[in-house]
Image (cartoon, rainbow, N blue to C red):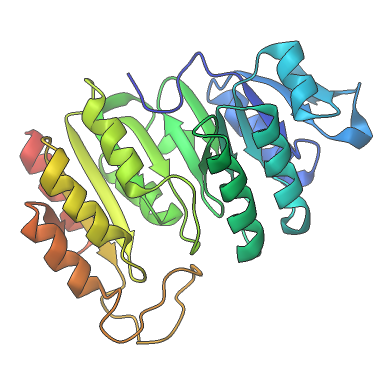
Length: 294
């Protein structure tokens, strides 16, 4: 199985006709993703050509859903228009919205996440500023390279960091993944570590969970408390940022340490207290996983 995204998922791409949208739509199609349409009101009624495929362009998400039965949207819309695009998808009732766009103002992210919550769970948002998610052998929604871990397997991965997602997937490619979810590193994101932990715990094909966190906030500490109370499967973690200077943002807008709050050491201690094995490097983390899964 997989979480959130399967081979049955029907995907719309908001911003498909832009440069990034076209590039990554082509990659998603090559990975087997069932892309049923793009959304661009200025190009509605046209088709976009991708090698041996043509994909129709719709004026709105609602129109695309009505015509195709789409249940996933991937957003490649520039930051200044991203809030409108995400809110359009939420209002249309798409089950999953994957927001790849980085640089979205925090107040815009707060607004569209609140809009989604007001619909009482009708729409799950992943991101923003995330690489998306992939269920190898089934579907790929976002920018995760499909060839770094081409086969399905027994590991579930949830990560704040896109590049660390790629590294762990590559190092563990021989075992394979049920799903890998990049939740993004902005201060305000939709899907959390805990959401993914719960989904992987319930997934019969996931035997072990890899959690990648980073400095800033308390998401990893909250995940540790959830693991201690609710997760029976083994969890292995890596926390990025042990050498980060205090008070300095490190790449992700959410990765900032203030005093003793949000440090890598505090997160490592909380996770280890919950029975999670924490690697000191990504490669060491992968080695722990290999040892546990034999």
